[in-house]
Amino acid sequence: MSVFLLGVNYWPSRSAMYMWQRFDLGEIRADMAHIKGLGFDLVRFFLRWDDFQPAPDRMDDAMLRRFDAVMQTISDAGLRAMPTLFCGHMSGVNWLPAWSLDPNTPHGRFRTVAHNAISPYGIGDFYHDPVLLEAQELFARAVGERVCDHPALYAWDLGNEFSNLREPQTPEHAAAWSARLTQALVETSHGAVTGGTHGEDVEHDRHLRPSTLTAPWTIATMHGYSVYATFSRGRLDTDVVPFYAQLMQSFSRKPLLFSEFGNPVCGPGARTAGAFACLDEDEMSTYAQTVLERLHAIGTIGAMWWCWSDYALALENVPPCDEAKHELHFGMIRADGSERPVARTLARFAAQRRHVLEAPPPIADEAQFYSSLPGGLDALYRHYGR
Image (cartoon, rainbow, N blue to C red):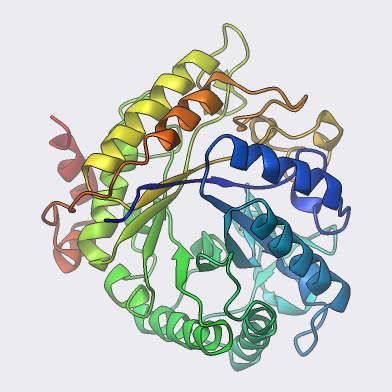
């Protein structure tokens, strides 16, 4: 029987999204040893697109060597890796190569950062535009070849919350994009593939259908946060994450890894962090335990905490933290390297080495669900967990 996997999403504390530019393998090596010491299985990390692909027909050799080093460091620590490609959307900012931007597309809801500068533009149609598709396939094949049959590779992730970069024109475009890049990764690396779907992909009709999007993948994934969900009953609502999980299980009919859950951490006596609600350290520990129990009970194959560490205060005046201070404080580890209570909670759960359970029957039909939005989601959740 399979063991329920526990993982963590990783950016280094001292550099966060600037990891590849300010590369410190010593910090990464120490963090991987700490992660392994807590009993975790998986590390999800992110290849910032504008760092790795300076032109549509060229990869950056120095960055690829750094990628090799990170994969080896994860392997040396006895962990498994989930590299996330085309990143892409991260922490309220879209980090993109300048060549991928469309001057006829404004950046929209999320700021665009291209080569460390703010851009007014958004990305072109990367699901369907031939140039952008060829560029992504080049990227996928370049990294796939470097880790063919690598013992540390658990799965590739086709982007982090990629619908926040741009919505596809049709579900068929999204499905074709997924199939093409999955094929490139499987052919070159022989590895499994998934993709970073998230709560807003079921809260709204973004022209994605999990049944076709995930069809070529080995597993499905999902992200969700009680403080962000439009339907949440409050910041401590532990039904939000399992509800998202069961929706994705129902639509994809794939094994489901919940690859992001967590919440921002409050300071003493606070209940908000900027524009968002937050949880204090004791609340966070209880929240994590309850959500993990629920995810295990509904047959998911594992869960990954967002995120490894708080970010250093030196990053508070650069994107994303300059406009989103709460992004500084999601870690199970404080910026000084000390462990929060939630780290020990997660470690105790990991030590139990629970077996994966059978998933329950579907809770919704995909076609009916998407045709019912937006009201259908609230109606379905009203009875969930009660």
